[in-house]
Amino acid sequence: MNIVYEPRGRAKEYSDLACNLYMGCSHGCKYCFAPACMRKTSAVWHSNIYPRKNALLSLEKDAALLNKRNDQRAVLFCFLSDPYQPLEKKEKLTHQALKIMRQYQIKSKILTKGCCELIEADLPLMKEAGTEFGITICFTDDSSRQNWEPEAAPISDRFEILKKAHAAGIYTWVSLEPVIDPQQALEVIRQGAPYVDKWKIGKLNHMKDEESKVDWLTFREEAESLLTSLNADYYIKDDLRKIKA
Image 1: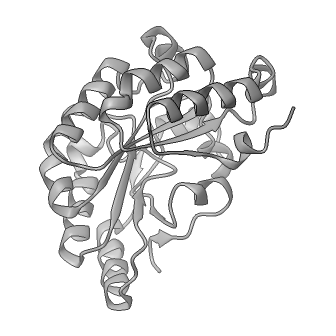
Image 2: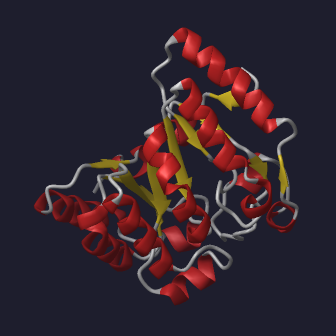
């Protein structure tokens, strides 16, 4: 295919297919894995953001092919970049991509921590396209968000757009990854439970000093106990699932 691809490794746990509409991401998250994947420095990745060349033309070709094959796998927007970062306001690639998904009847997913005003404007389109709306929420304290995700949407905005998506009848899911502060992560679950159809939870990786501060086995047990008590649908990613005493 041209721009749609099959993720590998940990990313495969989130979606069978994916599409990155932008290169670079302005959120500046300290835990971002994309710069290493793309062999760029964090400074370059978070400051040099641009649309993929011929992204929509390539996506339409791939959507037509998936439709012809009756491929039922969902395409996720996006792994390497955020589909609702500020550049979307000008370029509208995500908006147009969802229209393509709707036209060719291709299943789709969103994963974002971006501009909630842009997301809200696209909720009717997501509803029409049957898009599953996912948002990353790792904290309840916005000062933690400011430290780890300095240019991403405030936590209160993320909870609010999650509520609106749920109220609109859109399937909602939360990526609680990476877990950095276990107690905040558990509180995210408590606060978000009424509005979330599925949780995907994963540990912090590639930051050994921070990882060592967390008792991952205890966190996993507490998280699963809480999710079970809430009768929640959830998925524990392999890295966290494999932690042993």
